[in-house]
Image (cartoon, rainbow, N blue to C red; front, side, top):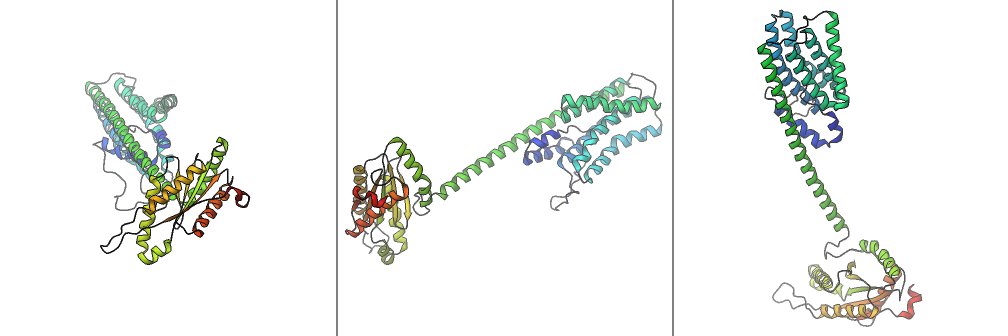
Length: 415
């Protein structure tokens, strides 16, 4: 007779919640023996370590049987029962729980072995009620304990019929075999009081177990929710890192390939324009060779910060490769995009970069910019970038430190 065995929860709860229920169950029964599982320091085998539901049922069955043995013992004193009936009482209520636990724990399928034990509990309870002549209080407490177990285990619609069937079968076998006392609903004072005490303690323990289970479930759900939030945050950070350049914090070229065509499709549907700016640091290799790669990285980082300050919320800045950067400026005219590129170039070259070292003079760095626009110069992403790239190289050939727009008449060559 286990205190409660909601195995349907086992199929609904995640493993951490199931384990939490199992961990809280033994704490409810102070009369429970030490756990039969092996010490945590030793890795138990699959069959040696009992399933959490088997362990919980074992603790609860031991507790309830110990309680019910008291009023039944008082009744045996009242009827001056023979020694064999006392031996049966001790076996049923103080040895039987350990035997069932051993059987379930050593089975290949522990849950399948544990399932019939509730029916066996009910059949034994019915047999005891019939064998003693159906004393009112004893029959009631036996029925009540098993009824709560079955409702918790199977639910009301399925549990009550099984309970009645199992107890009825046990009672019928004993009654029709003639191995019973005469029908006598009377229960002695001691047996009545102990029945009340046993039932009260049972209900208190059952409620306490439910409370502990709810707390464990809530704690487990909170922990799962926290883990879920951490996983979501980690996934978001990984997604962000996958599209960001680690040195500058700008979007990388991979992300450009993901957003360029959708942005072109949006501008095409809205009959709007999209400007592409390609920006290159002049003489960057010379900076790396003469000042070192640390200074070169600092140049790129300063340029990235400047570009982020010069763009709108809807604009996007990418590190295109090496010392090249690309800006997507949606819903902007070619003239305005050219002015923006020129303002960026002027601001950068007019802000000397101060590097560490007292004797190191400030570093002045210039930019070359190429500008192309959709739909004026190209209507596809790669072609549009090619136009801006050729405009950039034109700026390089003309002496660097300038902004060059792709000529509209060259649209055929670019597209």
